[in-house]
Image 1: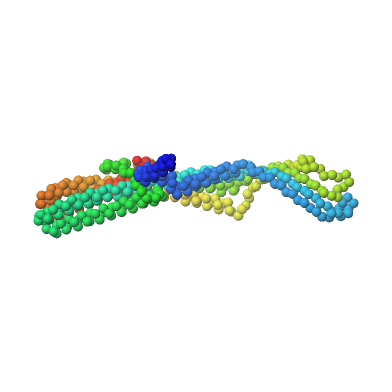
Image 2: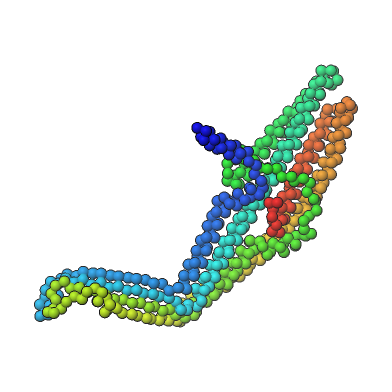
Length: 443
């Protein structure tokens, strides 16, 4: 009984701990990369490509085939005197054969190289998917943090409004303010409570989006807070060219396009191999067994199985040379097509480089603009905080109306919201630049 109680306690404790778990950014990214279905599919593509390499290696080896046949016949056949008699015979044959390629215009070698390039290409496709998922997870994670800060600000404002209602009600009951001022305070407080509900819904949606990206249940899902603080407005890199030059050597899309050019070169070689002669060989061994059931000649006997198969064994060795002379210009046109396809691949590479450069330039300008916006938001928030302090004092002494005080407070709320938006926008766009540069965006 005690054992069962301990077991149930352990189970419920583990469930409670899991439900209270707060996912860190690294845990979210690692989980997505490990369990995302698209990632799993691309990992299988890498395995398939590796199998193609093994298949291409097998082309260098000879094959080996065994065959056997057996038959029974019954019918009229002449005996030693020429008289037709009914006879029954059994015969069988056995053979081993092997064929291999000596030379086929380096086709096998180039096919192996193509298969190896395919592995690298599949690995780069996987890297691209992993990069995209990592960036999406970081973006959604920051959106949750953004929603949490907005909710915190809205909650504080709702608490301030709640206290103002108490103060305004006391002033109204004491005859210091008209009922209209009390109603205005209550109306503002109701709007603040409504904003809290709105921010709670926004946070729930942000958590849902992140959990869906991780492909896990959104029930009791939550993330750990990250101390973003006040990031430096100084850009990480002097200009976009610094990021672009680094990205050229490590960006999966560029490497994939370069592999396509290399693959096009191999296709040209493969097509040109059809101009060259091919040489192959074949070797084999065979034997047979025969048994006649009746109508044997005088003195004739059926040798036993192993004696016949040993006596009748035969060997063969052959070489086959194939020299292409004319194939209706098929090879010529295939070579021409492969050359054109290489030019297409080269243009695709240049276009990929151009797109990457444009993306990085845009990301750099976005980060630069976000830094300025964040800096301006800091200055604005500082000024609005000072204005709110002064307004609070004036309102407490009765030298400021409720309407004017609400205007100052609304400006502070707007400044706080703008500050949060600018901060997280700047943080994300900075991470995008780090992403292009090849640095970790999880830290």
